[in-house]
Length: 296
Image (cartoon, rainbow, N blue to C red; front, side, top):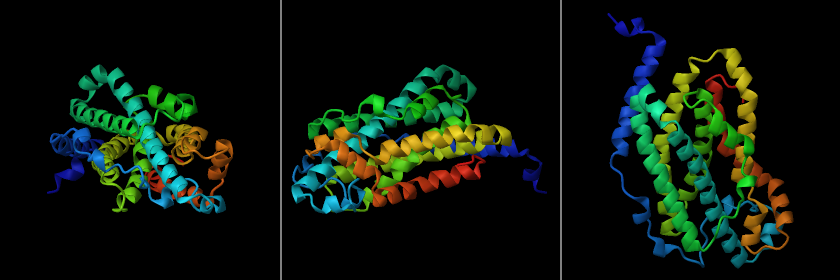
């Protein structure tokens, strides 16, 4: 006799969630400080730090007119800028988990245990990105005021245990992960770049697995009407995040030494190659959230 059919669907989802979270916790226990694993001496100031296809201006006629030195400098600045985005995202998560740790500790001890591991890993990423910033001699390029305001508010104030909150976390993890996969495929990049990317990919894979299972569990408790009601907000959060992820601020082009930063930023926003890359990287998150009933 198959007793699984007699277990309520929600209870089965909870059991699957707890089993997965326990496995993630076990894998996260073998922690090593990422700052100590990066071969920082390989950060060659005369080498590209991103593949050309990931540069925001790649594919434009104006890009082909840039000198090799300008392209290399742009690749270095855009890689640091990409890691700066990671710093912003991780600061949001660290702030939110810290603010709700007492409630989460009692509400869901299994998840809380794993989230402490995740918190440690996010702090490690932040220290790694700050070390990159220090060694590249770049200060923060994108002001906080230019980060997506709705994404910041939603991540801060949406109910912590809700599917909608974890949907925003998944978007912030999954979209950059698609970029990381492209970076890591280019083995000719400096070893430090590849190590930073690999550490981030490996640990974010666990973070995304936790976000997905939490969304699946929490979305079961949401009515269809509530999902439709929250969907326009999620769509706008998604749109704002994609904009900040794929279209650098004017300050990034200024740091790369390109004249008329405003014009370069405008060109990037209209770049068909960049828009296509953005859509490709957004697709997995969008498809998953649609399977959970969110109209994206």
